Structure formats: structure tokens, C-alpha cells
Amino acid sequence: MGRAYLIEIKPTTEQITKINQTIGTCRYVYNLYLSKNKETYEKEGKFITGYDFSKWLNNVHTKEHDQWIKEVSSKAVKQAIMNGEKAFKNFFKGLAKYPRFKKKKNQDVKCYFPKNNKTDWKIERHRIKIPTIGWVRLKEYGYIQKDATVKSGTLSQRAGKYFVSILCEVEEIQARPKLEENGLGIDLGIKEFAVRSDGKIHKNINKTRNIRKLEKKLKREQRSLSRKYENLKKRGEKIVTKRANIDKNILRVQKLHARLSNIRLEYVKSIVDQVVKTKPRYITIEDLNVKGMMKNRHLSKAVAQQCFYTFQTWLLAKCKEYGIELRQVDRFYPSSKLCSCCGQKKVDLKLSDRTYKCDCGNEIDRDLNASINLLQAKEYTILT
Ligand SMILES: [Zn+2]
Image (cartoon, rainbow, N blue to C red; front, side, top):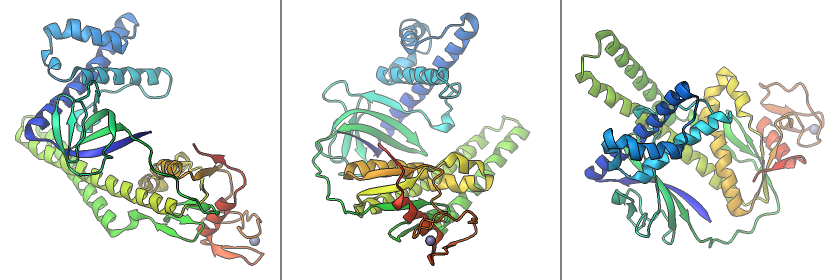
């Protein structure tokens, strides 16, 4: 069984230099591959494959120019090229936009290191051995299963912190738990994050004081950053000393972004854990249609902050682990309009109606009603 881990590491100053050099080289080579391809396409109408570019880079280009490319792991450089090729192929297939140059400030470059020999990617309780970088201390101990064998890993940097993500082969030892007879319906929303058919409510974390405070702080930092950019433009690029202030400001923005997304991710994960611990036989959720909700200008930010996709992905992974069936109903299933008691459909239900009232005498919270309808849904697809 394969398992992925993302761990923060504590590299030494020397290792940081080496990591930054590798990341910088990967970014440079990726961008070089893009621009070389653009040039060749405009001149000759041809596409250069990653393989051909790699050959040219090693046998021709680095003989005369950019010899420093050779100073970092050739495997990582090769992977950067192959990532570029993949970006082009996705573009050709219509799956993605035309590949863009990677910029330093976006921090979207990851360095890939495959395991080539036995001594690569070794793990001990408090440290990990990364090819060409050496032993690096881990920030958290005992997190990775001891008998795990690493197959490959990537290095990345975000908001001044360094991370490795590794793909491990682990032995499946855990026996599946015994599940309960009943299922569980979950209604996701903006007011509350989730309302469950068993009556439990998971609150919207974005309404808490802590998150609001961080969001305010982020806005302030973003405003001050754009002001600094404007001033720089007005007064010309000559003022080099100001650059340090801008870099500090960028780092503050990145740190706040990272902190917010960490809090949200941890929250979503904790909800998933609580849900699967009730060990239902199946769980039914709605087709999120996030795209449709995102079109609504007033809702889009609130929807994005809820991380529904992340929730679904984590839920699916955990359901697989527990052997729980994850069901999803069509987005046209009228989960909020049906009466969960008698099955009548109420066509004129308004968004402002917080309580569902039916002629049969059923009076119930709107979201709870929806979650019970999800629980009772007869038509669904099983997510795998
Ligand atoms: Zn009814």
C-alpha cells in the first residue's frame, strides 16, 4: 500500500543554501525549456520533447553556458524538464492553459528525487536522508511509520519553511473496524460547515474570532504591500534598499496565507475523523457543484474558504480505510425541498426559510431535514 507524507524539515544553513540552489536551478531549467520551445515553435513549427531538450542541455548548452546547472542533482533537473513536458501535453490535450513561467515569488517549484540506491531516502526517528542534501532533521518526530520504505520524494519551500513530501510503501497491518448498521447523511453549507443526519453540527470555522482576526491582518499586509509596489513604481527602481522591506512584507503575506490554510485543513481533517469514528455503514453527501456556487459573487469567497473539495477528498480516503461506502447524490436531487418524514416535495421553499414545515405535521431545521433526505436517498453514485 502506498502512503504519502508531508513533513516539515529543519535544514542547516548549508543545507538551505543547497536546497535553494536546487530549487532555483529547477525553476531556471523549467523556464528555459518553455522559452526554448516557444522559440523553436515560432521558427520551425516543431515541439521539443523533454528527452531531446535534456540531451541538448547536457551535451550542448552546459558545455558553453550556465555550467552551474551541473552543480545540482541531475535527477531533479530532469524531473523539472519532464514537468514542463507534461504541462505542454496537458495544454495540447485542452486540459490546461498554455504553460507559464515559474516565478520565484509563487514558490511553486518542487524538486523531485527518486530513490536510486539503498542509502537514498533513509528514515530514522528524528531525521531523513535526502539524496544530494544528506541527513536533515525532522521538525516532528515519530510521525512516519518505522518500517516504511520511501520510493521517491520532493522538496519544497513555502513561507520560509522547508518541506519534504515522500511516497512510502507501507505494510497494511490495520484490520478494518466493524461498522454500524445505519448510514449517515451530511449536508454541507455556508452557515454551518456540516449538518449531519444524526443531529450533530460542525460549525463554520471561518466565523470564529481567530480566523477573522487573521483574515483582517492578511488584508492589511496585502494593502501595505501593494502600496509599497506603487511607491516603487512612482519613484523608479533605483531605491534598492526598499527591496528588503518589500521582501519582508511578501514573507508576512505568505506566512499568513500558510497559517490560514493550515488551520482550515486541520479543521476539515478533524471533522472527517469525527465523522468516520461513528462507523456508519455508508455516508451520503451531495454533488458539491462548487463551480456553480463560485459563480455567485457573494458566495464565492465563503465557498472557497470552506474547502469542500478537500473535505470530500479526505473523506473518501478515510472511508476507503474504514471500508465505509461513500455515496453521492446528483446535484438535482432536491435534498432541501423534500419532507424527510412523508416524502412530499415543497416547491416554494425559500432560502430564508430556516425551518421546514410540512402539512404532515413535520417541523424540522432546514439543514437537518436535508441531511436526513441524503441519508434516505435511493439514487446515488458510489465514489471510489
Ligand atoms: Zn411531510
